[in-house]
Length: 80
Image 1: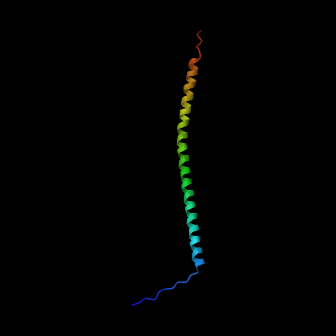
Image 2: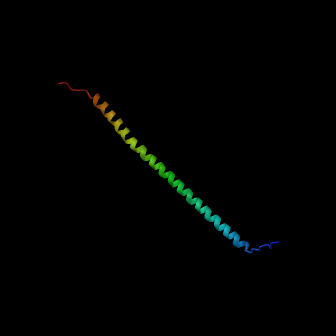
Image 3: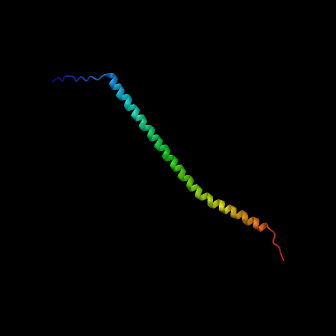
Protein backbone atom coordinates (compact mmCIF):
# COMPACT_ATOMS: atom_id res chain seq x y z
CA UNK A 1 0.00 0.00 0.00
CA UNK A 2 1.81 3.04 -1.15
CA UNK A 3 0.57 6.52 -0.63
CA UNK A 4 0.97 9.19 -3.16
CA UNK A 5 2.62 12.29 -1.77
CA UNK A 6 0.45 15.33 -1.34
CA UNK A 7 1.67 18.37 -3.13
CA UNK A 8 0.79 21.76 -1.75
CA UNK A 9 1.79 24.62 -3.89
CA UNK A 10 1.71 28.03 -2.29
CA UNK A 11 3.83 30.90 -3.36
CA UNK A 12 6.70 31.39 -0.95
CA UNK A 13 6.05 35.15 -0.87
CA UNK A 14 2.50 34.53 0.34
CA UNK A 15 3.59 32.16 3.11
CA UNK A 16 6.34 34.51 4.28
CA UNK A 17 3.93 37.45 4.16
CA UNK A 18 1.45 35.62 6.39
CA UNK A 19 4.23 34.69 8.81
CA UNK A 20 5.42 38.29 8.90
CA UNK A 21 1.88 39.52 9.58
CA UNK A 22 1.44 36.96 12.37
CA UNK A 23 4.70 38.06 13.97
CA UNK A 24 3.57 41.70 13.81
CA UNK A 25 0.30 40.79 15.53
CA UNK A 26 2.13 38.90 18.27
CA UNK A 27 4.48 41.86 18.82
CA UNK A 28 1.50 44.22 18.99
CA UNK A 29 -0.21 42.00 21.57
CA UNK A 30 2.97 41.83 23.66
CA UNK A 31 3.31 45.63 23.57
CA UNK A 32 -0.30 46.03 24.70
CA UNK A 33 0.27 43.54 27.50
CA UNK A 34 3.37 45.43 28.64
CA UNK A 35 1.41 48.70 28.65
CA UNK A 36 -1.34 47.08 30.73
CA UNK A 37 1.20 45.70 33.20
CA UNK A 38 2.91 49.08 33.49
CA UNK A 39 -0.44 50.83 33.97
CA UNK A 40 -1.43 48.34 36.70
CA UNK A 41 1.91 48.90 38.43
CA UNK A 42 1.35 52.65 38.27
CA UNK A 43 -2.14 52.29 39.74
CA UNK A 44 -0.75 50.18 42.59
CA UNK A 45 1.98 52.73 43.29
CA UNK A 46 -0.55 55.58 43.36
CA UNK A 47 -2.79 53.69 45.76
CA UNK A 48 0.23 53.10 48.00
CA UNK A 49 0.95 56.82 47.95
CA UNK A 50 -2.62 57.55 48.99
CA UNK A 51 -2.10 55.30 51.99
CA UNK A 52 1.05 57.17 52.93
CA UNK A 53 -0.75 60.48 52.52
CA UNK A 54 -3.36 59.42 55.02
CA UNK A 55 -0.57 58.78 57.53
CA UNK A 56 1.38 61.97 56.83
CA UNK A 57 -1.45 64.36 57.67
CA UNK A 58 -1.95 63.12 61.27
CA UNK A 59 1.82 63.17 61.83
CA UNK A 60 2.06 66.79 60.63
CA UNK A 61 -0.85 67.79 62.88
CA UNK A 62 0.70 66.05 65.89
CA UNK A 63 4.12 67.64 65.37
CA UNK A 64 2.67 71.12 64.83
CA UNK A 65 0.50 70.76 67.94
CA UNK A 66 3.52 69.71 69.99
CA UNK A 67 5.53 72.69 68.74
CA UNK A 68 2.73 75.12 69.49
CA UNK A 69 2.38 73.67 72.99
CA UNK A 70 6.09 74.17 73.62
CA UNK A 71 5.91 77.75 72.38
CA UNK A 72 2.94 78.55 74.60
CA UNK A 73 4.73 77.09 77.63
CA UNK A 74 7.78 79.25 76.92
CA UNK A 75 5.74 82.45 77.16
CA UNK A 76 6.30 83.84 80.65
CA UNK A 77 3.25 84.06 82.81
CA UNK A 78 2.31 87.49 84.08
CA UNK A 79 1.51 87.55 87.76
CA UNK A 80 -0.72 90.34 89.07
